Image (cartoon, rainbow, N blue to C red):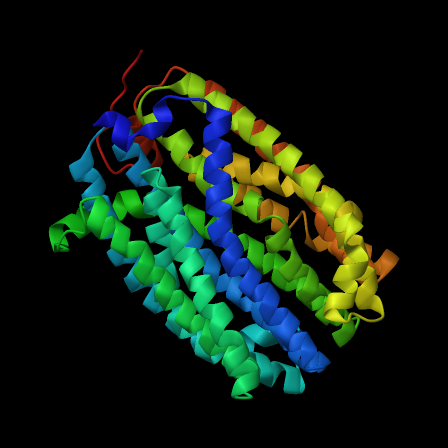
Length: 464
């Protein structure tokens, strides 16, 4: 039974990382490609204000999605550890209580954001008609956040079981729904941004349903929620979820500053940045997936006391992202002219796309290194390390470098400054992760880490 539920305790780690990352990325790519196609459709309307509105709205949606990523990290980390200890009953309890908390807090967070859309869009630099378009778009999508959270958590739980294929299929189904509805609603019914928003809502509901069904059918299902169990698991869930959410929120806040800085150079610059923002997750979907794919591998081996494999998984993750970033950077460089033509970019927008398809793509390696380090932090009981690294990267590693880059090089300098800040904080993250792994080399029990981290249970130490 342990072999079925904790599949990463044996076998080639680089192979596990590759398979999990590629299969997980297919699902992510389905979602990212729909956003990419959305941007193509909006560009075809020939209205720079619409494209800019998507750029501003994207910064806000990134903010809301970060809450879901944090909850998904907590669910994946806790369930994978329970499986590593072969405690299937505990895993089922954590699945149930984690999903309940995800739905409840998703509703609360969506309400808070929806009530403050005017303030949030103004903070990222939107004004006038462009701001009004962004708000109308967001008013439709933001209430669907609870479905997104449940879908993301369901995918993380499936990956914790090593079932990357079903996690992938959930997002593929959502992507297909969005891809079918987009042209119908945007062009067929002439709804433009409103149509794109409703297509996204339908996709989120689809992802939630198709992520939960395999858990119910194949992995013991979801128990009836009970208040004592919910209260008991509040600590363990949020001991990881809270710092993970804070960690993820740093990224959209940093991106919001970047969007505001770019707004000073006009709507063409914001539209060009919006294209780059859609190109990035499509091009580097495998890297974005790596953090979620690597987490269960580290978590299971940590739960099973295989510290040697934890260390090797970390090293193999860094090698994997290096090879992948080099390959993608070459592809982008070769296709840069076609990408410009596809979106009909003009003026400074062309400069930004060429910049992304050149040196900035190579520098994405350092973002990938931070993802690998964060996976280690979250699954080895030190999630606040992720919090400090991400906030440092998106404040000290973004605000001064972006401001200096904008002053020296204009709109292009905004993206240059954003990329350069990632190099320093990648080095810090890797140093912290290496030290943490070395310090935990003699610790076999993750329970002790939970206790030190959250002060929520009696301290237990087990030596090899």
